[in-house]
Image (cartoon, rainbow, N blue to C red; front, side, top):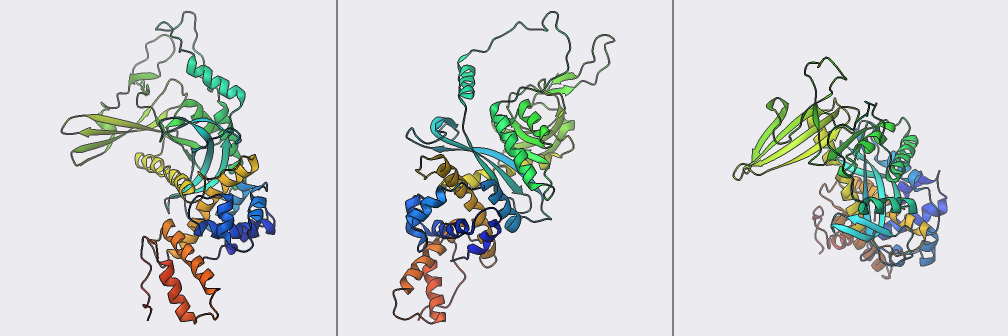
Length: 445
């Protein structure tokens, strides 16, 4: 069983040694256990020093999770020569019942419809060197009554249409910042707290989010945090080339030129073309304007064409940094998906989908613990992959489970086996259930 306590001692400036000791029992239990991750299940697998009452006390304790995430990352995962992106995304945890704090109906992309459950927004530091994501802050999304009413009114009130053309008597005005929604205000507060906690140790330049935030309000929010936004636009976004024609001689100067047709972009903007299995992929990079944004936008358009049927599809990626090259915009946006893998592991292995508590503090601790385990496991796997490069989370769980079975069995023997025999027993038992085979050891005789 890997030694967990040395990794947790860096947290003693924020929590008591009692809490660290409880956590050092809970983490090995989570690594070894099977089935649903509940408080009772953790107590059954954590062994001596972690009774059910102890687990209850831990989950009932108010913990500074944001500081714990940062301390663990700074002590065990941070590399000064690496470059990091700040990525954000929301995950939905389906829940039944009526008494869980924050219970509401949220849209789940996998289900394709709103489902009852809880929502958690997470910020993560994505490493360009290791191409992995490390959760750094988690916050539950709790909508206020005013926010619910505003959302419902937007969904039920039909959009009003006005006559085409410029309204009579209107004047040219400087574009004002779009109204910021409560959701963006929450996210901005979370980002600012993370940036303040990091300080100057880790310079961050880019905020990478999904297409839900591909709008002017999110862009303004990112710039207010002194970050450049990388996101995805709607495929039917109205984008315009900057006007470079002659001045008409009267009135204000035009700034909007021809409208951008993503499937008929001039060849001079082509950056890369490739063909694979009768699918042609063309990547264009253009600087365009949108009528809701005051600044130019760096847009990367990926157009795919089926050479047999001539069917086409396109994706529009946007970045507020005009100097960022097309390949980095694509790479950075693709790296955002590493946060989805964090959510997958937290739900599949560490209990993000399993907790059954209905108290606010315990809900917060269960969600944060599941994503904190993602970082702990990444640190443990770094050491174990020095000997076994292909070792996965499932391999680690199989190893820890086998080690726990061996430990329980050895306690029943009248005498402890010799060291060489014990090592071979541990190797054989911890091999059961693994996907990637362990290094070859001498067979038992």
